[in-house]
Image (tube, rainbow, N blue to C red; front, side):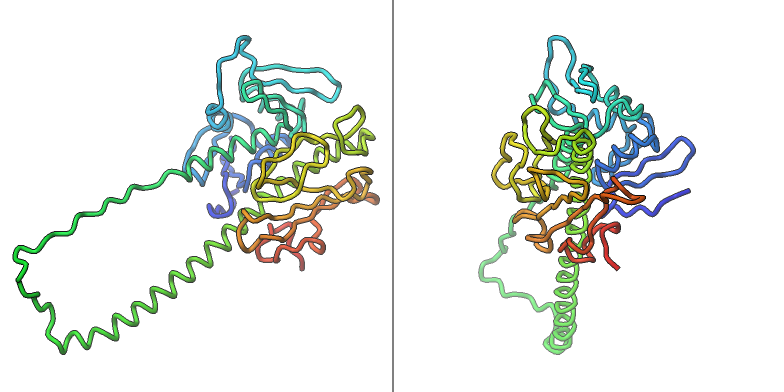
Length: 327
């Protein structure tokens, strides 16, 4: 069984032990597949953005390695489980194994001792893979310009390359080639903008899904008010450079130019809650000022299921992820 693999919109390809392949667009979906047992940390992963190929565990471990620092007790990570107990461990492979065994989830709070940052497990891994992607994209080829050659004789008359008649015949051809080139460049720029918009919309939907996991946990535990106090809901989710919106749980504010998805009713979360991601000025021009919205079914057979609200979302249909496209 094989899936269509489009590097522009699908970042990860995982080869499973039976030879089948699973195509995933972003880090949140990679973690979801691991949590559901669809993949394991030992399976081979290919990243279309960087061209790297390694096991899931080795690849994510390398992404975390850039922030690695010496630690006295060798325990880099500390997670707080739902029963209030804490678990400390030193490597990413243990973290991924705990996710696969369902001992923790993407929404479980995790402290990285090296950076001092506390956020859900999914936010830590998404940030690490995002940094790895930015680092790979920063590598640029060096362009060397050859110096102009001085003429042997300053008074030397220019040589005629073509007789006048042939030159006139070539003018229409050159004009046509110029028009075709300009059209091709314009079309290519348009396609690049569309691909960028599709990719960033997928990333925002991943942010919404991760935040919905944290909100769902709060609803199930009866913590219906956003805040840092006892009995309050504190998703502690990482800020995104693509979005606008201040944190609603009273935690440290986002860096200027970054934002976070917004819940509809932070002071009284309800069973039909929705979460909105609003694209800011650093997003693709086709997305700026537009929104993606997910909503929770509050009753019926789908009670507790979060779905993309294609009616409330204002991102144009052609730029939305497939699950958010209206009919």
